[in-house]
Length: 411
Image (tube, rainbow, N blue to C red; front, side, top):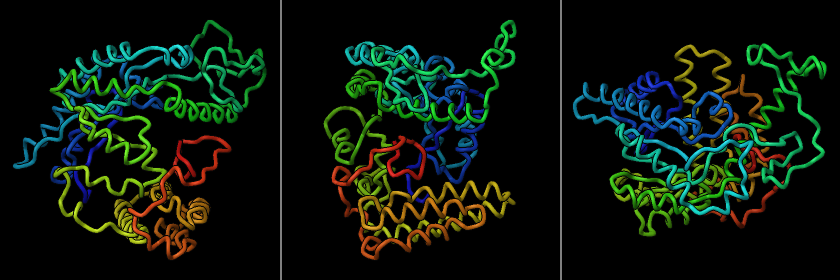
């Protein structure tokens, strides 16, 4: 947390637990977090199945109770510390939610923005009553549940007229208690390979998450309208922002939207966003803005030292080998795209993925140093603000699209 401002994001639907989590976040350090954000925008089945993420948008009154509890928790801690103000409570959300099984993308794309604007406005009005002053808006709908006609070889097209007529039937798992008056379907279709079905379910869930970023139309103008309609609140735009120029356009184009949230583009090509600190306009530490930008090798060396510090810190708490392995795998994934577009990037990524499998016994710093040994000296010595534009980098688009870490392209 050497750089500021830093935001802590929480997920969940239990207002009491969220209040306690916000209190813990507010108590961390000396006001380290400037904001605490509630995630109401994640469409993942793993999250939505527990009524979290964008599924919360179906219950705006519950969201209001959650953020009210978070406000109370954060303020209860700051009131005991002189000179430390409570972090602001913000909400990340979408324009609304729909059932993925019945959603028609073609019909939705033909609509104007009025329906989306009205739906998200009602959500904001309800949540703002609990004290929220800032909203991060992903400018598209969230689609909940599994998509229709999904299978291992399906491309996930959900237009009604594009369904294949020759799909083999999927086995459905019988859940005890779901409908005890009906015999399990498994008795009529034979033995179920549960491991295979679980893997297929995971693949469908991954595809559904990616489709949520591609299928619903992006409606950035709705975010601009929200900023004009609710001038007492702050709005940040999110969704399909591909490069730093697009970020600057959102911030500088003269509307009331105060910022842009970037996800996959910054992961896939982090060096292309190396000048982001210049947009903070006094909100960022002057020492951070004025300092010379480092080389990629310097970034990696500093990160390797950070990995050792984190491992030592966790080991001092008596962490188990399993916990240490999980930490190492997460640490190793962060600089995976550091050399995107540069000589040696492919070798660095291949060896990082290979060495990552040894994370149970090998420290993250050693894995990163080993992979870096395959990067040419000229790439290590190149400053982070000297990069190849994303559109000029050759892309491989074959194989499965994945949203997890350590992929050539994170979709």
